[in-house]
Length: 170
Image 1 (cartoon, rainbow, N blue to C red):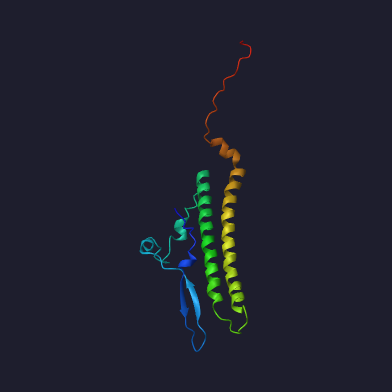
Image 2: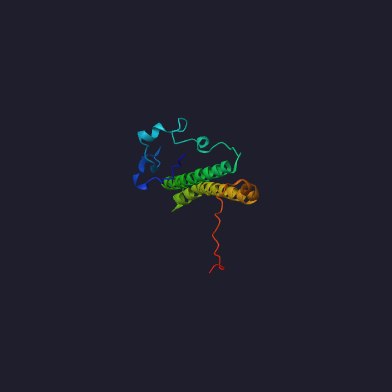
């Protein structure tokens, strides 16, 4: 399983001008460039994007410590990648909405409105970071709470007997 954690290149963004209706001023909209044909083949048919969230996480099979560790690590990786994507979406939304002119003509009015709207998406990105932290903390707490049971069945290398120096033999 791989998670795409690449940030989109802002220098390669597509900018489209939308003309206003009924004499209203138009605005510029920043959009991410279209995916290449190679990536479209592996895209989700419902959303047109990469893997679905269901296929990114393994089934919650908590039958062994290794399965618990794998689930927690996979959840952490998915949510961290998702948080980056949501944060980038918040920045794109902020930049896009800031281009819409303020209806009352206030200076910086559209930027403030855009900041308030995209702030909700930023909080969602922070929440997904917290989910990633919670997944890592879940495995750490599991290892701490169930340490005696884990150590009882852990396969460890046997200690080699050390050679003792016989100080009496001189």
